[in-house]
Each structure stands twice: as C-alpha cells, then as structure tokens.
Image (spheres, rainbow, N blue to C red):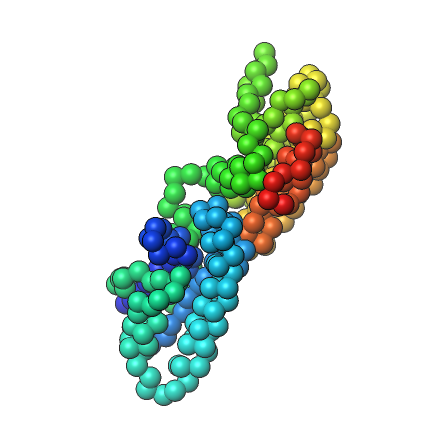
Length: 281
C-alpha cells in the first residue's frame, strides 16, 4: 500500500540580493502516521563552499547548527504529545522566515517506502544529485578543480598521454620539468567485483606508463571516492581491496574528500607541483 507524503527541499541562501541558493536537505511528513523526518547535508559541505565565497560558507556552518537543533526538537519531542497536529507543525517549520535557510513550496508524493527510505531517496535526488548525468568520478574531478581554483592553483589542465598502445588522460595535470597529475578514481560501481577490477585496470595502465617512463614515481596522486556509508559491507571491503591494489604503485593514494571537503593532501600536492604556497590557506 502506498503512503502519502508531503515534503519540502531545504535551501541555503546566504545573500538575499542575489537570490541564489543551494539545496542542503529535505524534510518530509508521513500523512498517514503523522511522523516527520528529515536529512541535512554535513556541516562541512564542499558544494556550498564551491558555490558561494568564504563569507557565505562561514555563514553556512552557523545556519546548519541552528537548523539541526530546531529540527531535532521537532522529530524527538512533538510526536510524544498525543494528538499533535502534524500538518500544522510541518507548515510552521517550512514557513517563510528572515534567515539564510529557506524551504521550497511543499510537494505531494506517494511511495511504497517507509518514511526513512523516502527521505533518503529525496536527499539522493535533490542534494546528492543522483539524477545528474555526471558520474561520481566526474563530480569528484569537478570538486577538486574548483578547490584548486579557489586557492589560485589553476595550473592543472587536462593532459592526454598518447602511446603506441593506448591513450591515457589525466583530467588534472601540470607540466613543468616533468608531469605532475591528480587522478580521481571513484569506486561506486554496482558490484564489489567491478570495484576491484577497476582498481586493477588502473594499476595496469599506470604501471605501463611507468615502464615506458612517461610518468615517474611520486608524481601522480590518486584521489579515491568509495561507496556511500549505507552501502553493503561487501562494497566497503571491495573498496579496501581496491585501495590496497593502488597503493602497490609508487604513488600517493588518498580519499578525495574528507568530511565533505576536498582533502588537504590534494591541495598540498598541487602546491608542491608548482613550488609555491597557494593563496587563501
């Protein structure tokens, strides 16, 4: 039996004059069981930093703390008050307010899902942007490129190495006296075996370039992205095996993002590649 839901998208709009916003969460009301649930992006959320400047990102941290406090009280305490008016409470939560947190107009949907699963699906669609045609690897590459540009490390361009047997592209590379490159690799394939195979695929390609002396040890940084936290244990085990496979190469292997922000180790590698300290650090 389908459940009827009312939901809204939570948005962060730090500058009223521009009216630009970023989706940072979702909230939903189960109209049958009179329950409210929500999910909010992490406090360190790379896409907010990339979309707005440092001033806007600093405001996000405080706004998200207040929002968590407010919504936490609603979900924890109000359902215990007997015949509480869930719809009125939902309307009050999403009402227009004079703050950087805004809610979309409420929408209605039916689904064969419980409330938690329904909220997770909304979050994937509107915040994680699972509807995007871009792959996780393309998104990771974009996030890293934006982080480098913010620090005026915009020397990294796409470079293709053409060889008699194969052509291999590095989307973030800098040619000085030798090639220095960042190679994002996302291990979000549907099966654990596909993750392990993808790591072996790239180890073989990079080993080949090493043997041909087209790249040199320690001049490539591999930035990885693993499965989501709610993925099956087998997927996380496969990601561990894939990471071990890549660490057999003479390159640094690091997670692409830490706590929702581009890994500082990537910034440090880029800075060392051009021999200067990036601005804004």
